[in-house]
Amino acid sequence: MGTDSGETPRAQAHHVADSLVEVDLATELAALRASDSYQAADHAAKTIAKQPGVRVVLIAFKAGGQMHEHHAEWAITVQGVHGHVEFKVADRVVALMPGRLLTVAAGTPHHVTGVDESAVLLTIGGAHMPS
Image (cartoon, rainbow, N blue to C red; front, side, top):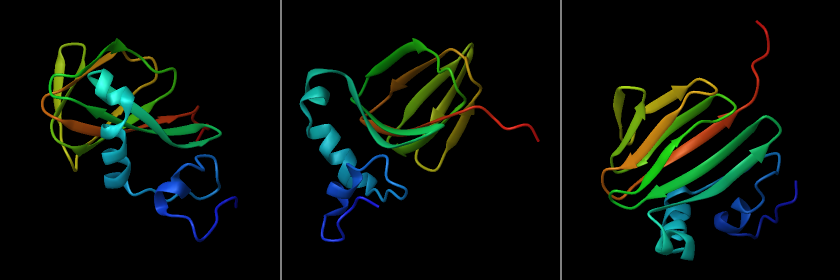
């Protein structure tokens, strides 16, 4: 739906609301790090997919880059993609690296720091259906 089979995976990734989105994270991370927004700041983000009730965002950090304390209105997951990120909730600090996944309840304040050049994949979810 909406993608041309002759498009590159990067071009297809720009169809963030399609019914199926295929993303090459290594390519997207390289493009994000080459972007003006990453060059001008200590971190940058790009929405990879967006559907009703869910959004997926790739976030790249420079070494020492920070997202100061904030919260999401919905539950989130954060998956390590590259490097080492410290994820802090209250007094607990978790080392987030490739292969690790965190879940965080809606409204929970958190702080994120890139210990080295790093990246995470953030998924912001919607309300849960009653079981």
